[in-house]
Amino acid sequence: MKSLYEDVNWQVLKQTLSNAKKIHVIAHVNPDSDTIGSQLALYHALTAQGFHIVMHNIDPVPRICQYLQGSGLITHGEDFSELQGCDTIIAVDAGAFGRLGMASSYVQGKTLINIDHHASNTLYGDINVVDARYCATGAMIYDLIQSYDLPMSEAMAAPIYAAVLTDTASFRLSTVTADTHRMIANLLDAGASVETASHEIYQNFPKQRFDLLKYALDSLDIQHNGCSAWISVRYAMYQETNMSAEDSEGFIDYARSIAGVCVAVFLREESPEQWKLSLRGEYPYDVSAVAASLGGGGHKYAAGCSLEGGFEKVQNQVFEAVGACLQV
Image 1 (cartoon, rainbow, N blue to C red):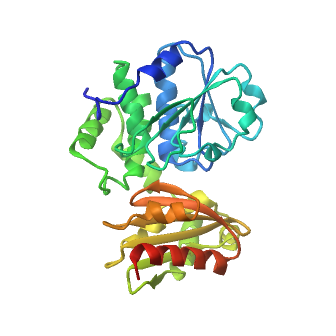
Image 2: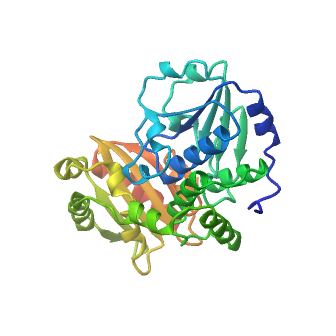
Image 3: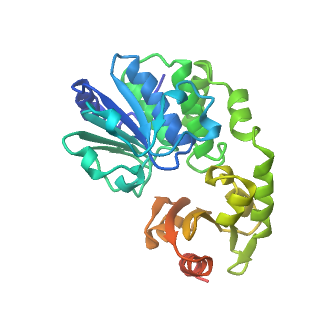
C-alpha cells in the first residue's frame, strides 16, 4: 500500500519509540472521532510490534466511537498516577499542549511526541510531526503504519476510516484527494466496514438529540448581508434535554448548508459562560484567522476556539471578527 505523502520523515519518531519502555498515547480534551480513531489505530499498530502502550485521556470516549475495537481500554480522568513508568507520550490531533488537559509537570523527564494535521499547531513536542496537507490525523497514522511496513488489520483500519470519514465531513471537504479515496479502498480491503461506521456515527442517536436540535435550529440567524449563518446552544438547553456537547456535533452543518453563506458559526455553551466556538468557511474566507484573533486556531476552512462570558458579549466578539474576515 502506498503512503499518502512519501516525503514525511517518520524516522526520528520511530527511533525514539524504539528506545521507549512504556508509551502513553493521549487525545485532546472532548475527543472526537479523529482523535480517538488515531489513538486506537496507533495503539493497535504499536502493540502489534511489542510496544507497551497505555491510553488515557482527560475526557471519556464519545458514544459514536465506542464501537471501535479497543475503545474500552481507554481510561479517563484527571488522575494520571496509574501511568507511572511511562517514559514517552504521544499526543494525537492536539494543536496545542493546553488541549491535552494534563499538567506540565507530568511531561517532565519524558519525551513528548506531537502528531497532528492542524496548520495552527504550536509545535509543543520534543518531536513534532505536523503536516496540514493531511485530511485527518488518522491519515497520518495510516502513513506511519505504512512506514513500518505493517500489514493493515481490521483493528487499525476501522478507526482510521472513522477518523477520515468524520474529519472530511463524509468526504465533502477540499482536503479530500484521489489518494484519500485510494487509502479508503485499502482500509475497506483490510476490514473497515462502511455500514458499521455509518450506523454508529450517523444513525444511532438518542431521541433527545433531536430535542436539542430543535433548540439549535430555533436560534438559526443570518447576518452580514447573507454571508454568515449563526447557530447556538445554551448550557440550559443541554441540561433540559440531558444531552452534552458531543450530542451537538454536526449542528454547524445546518448553518453551512444555506445558499450564499460563506462563514458558518456555531456557539455552544458547555458550562455556564464557557463557550466553544466552531467556524466553517468557504473559499476564499480563512476562518483559521478568525479563530486565531480570538485565541484559537485550526484549518483554513474549519477552525475554533474557547471563549468566556455572557452570550451577548461572546456573540459580539465573534460578530466583529467574522465581519472583519468577510469585510462587511
